[in-house]
Length: 237
Image (cartoon, rainbow, N blue to C red; front, top):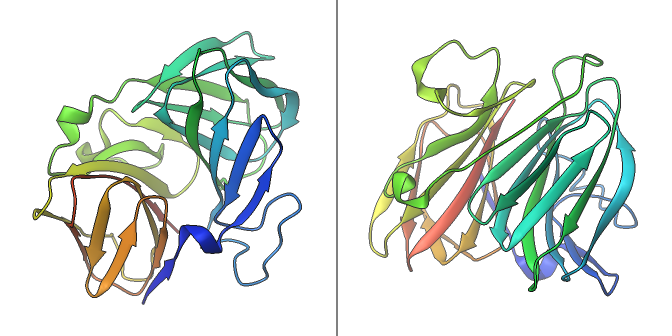
């Protein structure tokens, strides 16, 4: 099953400082057909104006992965962590039994992020935060794990930021005309792919930048770039 979810079909809300698009039901947007995809609960496509951001607010029992598409995001939290994550890089916050944090664009230009929430395998636990650089050159022509389950005891996720859920978040850059194939551990996994840039084709389905592609019941997926593309893929239970 491969289902295209065009960018113009997503839920949206423009708050002035924040232009948000929701792949799944979120805040004031509710679509009973798009509440979650397996354990993948949220995929927000946010554009944040310079000098603005999300003030301090709480979270619990959620794995929150932020992929920066443009600009940079500055994080602060109640655990004492502070960090600036630039375009192409990733931060992960395991909210655990509760954490408060803020996310601001302190840059001169706008910041664009994918904010991905995945339901954890277990509730509670000590909250954690981490960030890491992922050079795009190392993702050329292959999927590189950006975040992956701490329960995965294998070499394929070495270097990924840890998350407390049976899921993987991966990134790849694909040149026009070239292909990358991904093989999930089981056909019933829930795959969700979004091109951050460019355009790709999966079988006869074409996805442009910021479109979503929901997939399941597939033994493998081959993504062919129509244009030079940067893609993010979530593989969730």
